[in-house]
Amino acid sequence: MTEPVLDVKDMRVWYAGPAGPVRAVDGVSFTLRPGEVLGLVGESGCGKSTLGRGLIGLTPRGSAVDGDVRFDGRDLLSMPKRERDRLRGSGMGLIFQEPMTRLDPLMRISAHFDEALKTHEKDLSKDERESRALEALRALGIPPTRFRNYPHEFSGGMRQRIMIALALALRPKFIIADEPTTALDVLVEAQILRILVEIRERFSPAILLITHNLGIVAEACDRVAVMYAGRIVEQGPVRDVFAAPSHPYTKALLSSTISLTTQELHSIAGAPPDLVAPPPGCRFHPRCPSAMQICPRVAPPKFGPHAAECWLLDPSLSDSDAAPLEKQEVSVADEA
Ligand SMILES: Nc1ncnc2c1ncn2[C@@H]1O[C@H](COP(=O)(O)OP(=O)(O)OP(=O)(O)O)[C@@H](O)[C@H]1O
Ligand code: SF4
Ligand SMILES: [Mg+2]
View 1 (spheres, rainbow, N blue to C red):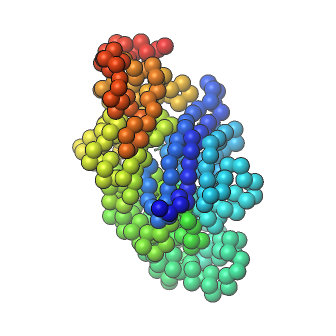
View 2: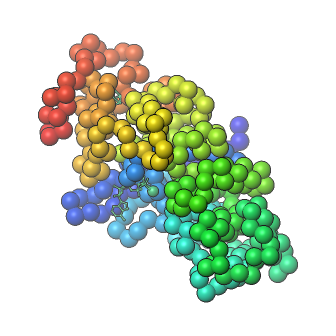
View 3: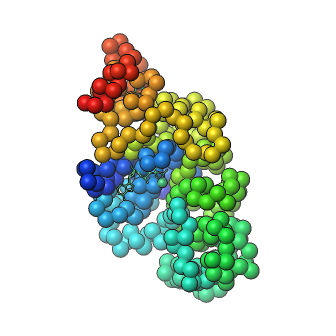
């Protein structure tokens, strides 16, 4: 088996907050192999973007990142900042939620590409830089005739595609695409799928795709990781996880989409927990329809082929631990 491009073990990202640290990513492990697309899903606020930003060292001041994160075998978290910044340009790319954050309104699109390629690929000639740029733009459906236009001459969706092309022109081994679906409604599902297919065929980077759209995950991802309250509670091949989800949260997430027209994940009963003081034991227990006596007491380890963090998968639970948790007990446990 090929070595992973990205190997993440027990990663944590905490933000400083007035009521104590916000544990936005709290012990997450996964790998990503060359050319593989991993979908990261979960409700708003569960820590998906924080995880993405933590991986490439873009978390804000006052935050702490911990764990073992290896990119191409190299330890990312302990490497000097300058080295990591260099890697971020060439080896890893990030496609932001907000498309205008990195396009300078005063610079032509051609200049954006030229500058990025000059910085990170010093050996390329001017012609080579231009052909790299045009290749990437063409892959994203931007005609070469628009190469010397300014950002404001494009629609929001086109600017977003230009951002993706900018990242791709550097031929990164690893890309984080954070919510390309919801950032702008102009990018419809079919378009995203076409772009993803194009990217995979032409450049085959490993992609971490952060999205609310389970349809896109089903179509475009090899594996899926389901995040809840700062942890990945289940992960595995998309087909397996979607056909036979192990974790009650994954089940809720999947069934919540059936009636959806907005593609937002809002129909799971209850609200996501406060990440300053998450519920004890299994963090999903206050919302879980299958919660048992053990759930608020002890955090579940990973079980089964999907590494699902759920006691239901433990065949050796005692009868008392496996007894259902009454609603009242849930709220008492919450207040504890
Ligand atoms: N700079 C920050 N300082 C303090 N807390 C933050 C900061 N950024 C995010 N958080 C908190 O961290 C948690 C995770 O946020 P994050 O943006 O990673 O979620 P997300 O899963 O990407 O959500 P969405 O789907 O809405 O994009 C949230 O509780 C959020 O309020
Ligand atoms: S560990 Fe318990 S509360 Fe958590 S998901 Fe499984 S059954 Fe539900
Ligand atoms: Mg986000």
